[in-house]
Amino acid sequence: MIKIISEDFSSIEYNRAALHPLQTWEWGEARKKTGVEILRLGEYYGNKLANVFLLTFHKVPKTNYKVGYLPRSVFPSTDVLNFISKYAKENKIIFVKFEPNEEISNIKEKNLIASKHPLFPKWTQVLDLNKTEDELIKSFHSKTRYNIRLAEKKGVVIKEMSNNEGFEIFSKLYFDTCKRQKYFGHSPKYHKIIWESLKKDIAHILIAFYNNIPLASYELFYFKKTFYYPYGGTSTEYRNLMASNLLMWEAIKLGKKLGAEKFDMWGSLGPNYDPTDAWSGFTRFKEGYSTKFTEFIGSYDLIINKKLYHLYNLVYTMREQYLKLRSLFLL
Image (cartoon, rainbow, N blue to C red; front, side):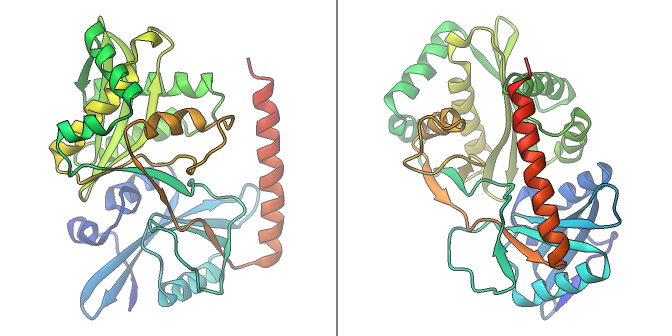
């Protein structure tokens, strides 16, 4: 049985069934504050809430239509897909994109097609945190170990600052990095809302300092025995001190301290990647910690309005090309 979950539902009960930080009650509240419409669904087996699905709906500019998104849930059953399809038809939703938090397998749902515009990378890297700290650091690539020791020797200090002061430091480093790398991400207001909504139980901030100068910072999520690395920023100062290597090592130790059994690096290229790819740098960086390449099931679309779906994809492609051209001319 599928039910729409009401606003007065127990957030604790809801989170017991949630699979990922992007499916938590807190994430839904954050998305509402950013002006996005949400829908929470519950899949019940008898009286037991077995699975939850947090969908977001995004307005298509200058139209009455919307597109839907369901990230990092379990793969939806046929009953869930049928419920979403009916809801979408009644609410002028062109299509719904699904990106389940499941590893690669065969897709048997005939109503889903592979998305031309995935939002999450298909690959990530995962580190097993059940090993001891000594076992972990011995497993790292020799260059990674060298860089960690170099940062320690040179006086880089890592502090957990999971408070508003820490967030402001992280935010500056993050957006400086976005500007430097010509990355068009979410706004400072969006990230502030996410932090305020998740800081109590889920979000953590680590910062690397040298002589009280912040050199690198991560915002990390902890949920259900898994640690996640969604956001990071670095400074151009003292790059020779390898602060990011020590920062990641301290993030790994923080994950273990919190009780995490694995560390999901959020995304990367796959194995045997092209070394000239724009993502090869951070893929190689993560690989230095002896992570395991893990392939997700991918991105799929449930099409509700076929004509508008094809038009939407055409416009989306044109926008992507425009942004790429724009980035070439940014100083």
